[in-house]
Amino acid sequence: MLIFKGRVIDGSGTEPIEKGAVVVDGEKIVCVCRQNELQEYPGAEVIEIDNGTILPGLIDLHVHMGVGKTFTMSPHEATVRALPKLKAMLDSGYTAIRECGGIGVYIRSAQEEGLFDSPRINSAGQGVFQTGGHGDALNGLYVPANIQKNLFATWGLCADGEGEVRQQCRYTLSQGADFVKIATSSGVNSKCKTVDKVEFSEAEVRAAVEEAAHFGTYVSSHAVSNGGIKLAARCGVRTIEHATFLDEEAAELIAKADAYVIPTFALAKVQYDMRDKLDPLVGKKIAIAYEAHVRTFELAFRYNLKIGAGTDFFPGPDNSMELELLVELGMSPMAAIQAATKTGAEVLMRDDIGTLASGKLADLIVVDGNPLDDIRILRNPQRIRLVLQGGKIKKHLTA
Ligand SMILES: [Zn+2]
Image (cartoon, rainbow, N blue to C red; front, side):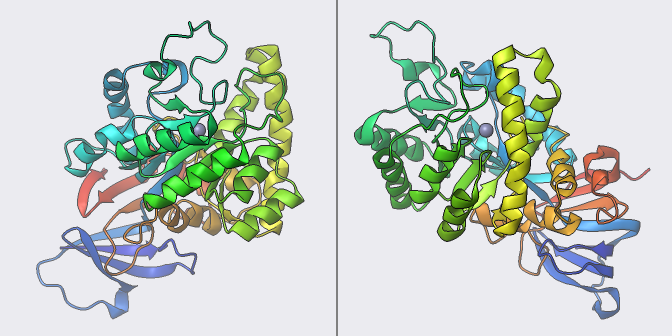
């Protein structure tokens, strides 16, 4: 049994408890209270935290493993390459991730058995995309018609027409996908000249939503263009990724659908900062998209949309950059923390993680200082003093 004593931010958005305590027994939290309300726990190990804060483990709602330049890498190699990155991410305070397309489904059960150190993995497996769309790994390349394109894609399958969409959704869900990832728009890096392309038809999106529902889950859509955002929101997509070209009408549709927005501003910022080094057309699209993306936040706040924290990064030590950016764009530090904890767990459809409360799994972190005063401390692995996952100490800096 472990007792953590210090400032507690429970992830629910309520005021911190300055002299708080969290009691962990085995894999679960058994008590969160003020220190003066703490009952006796004979034999418990007490971890006193001076000028530190106890928080729920963080959740990144949008990562990828085995993609990027490695579109066609085998899942085996992608796994080997992902392992040290997953460990670094856990060490930086992330105890769960949602992979929006990639190899996670194939390594999730090994993670659950504790065979390697990693955030908990929730994964869409191979996403379902239209031919020539955002997730078509061979878009624009010469591919003889008799070659099966889907043999090449570790993170996405091509599907055209309602029937193929249903088939590929069923396939990826039967492989163990936790949800279905689609794209209803192109991306800034896609092979097309503009940023307003819409992908998939309404019938195709509705088919994906229905198939996901039959498996007890939902659809997440990469939606950059305004038309793509609206198409997703209209057809019952539950999580809108990026939402770059949001406008009032789209914000209203998302609010009405009670969908989540995962802006992934971190990748937008990284790409914006390096736009001059990229292909001029891509650089131009990135600059246009970035300006629109900043306005997305004003609208999202005005319409009180549910915002989750995700980066669109590989797993790694730097994913808390998103929380810094959310604060820079006008969120309170408490709301940003909530986006990466309570809201994160909601998106994952898990009620056993995301907040610190009796009965939840003991996924918690101890940070040096107060992230409400300076959110940037969450991005400094040296200040992530302790990481507990399911009651097991995964990192503990004592010096
Ligand atoms: Zn992504």
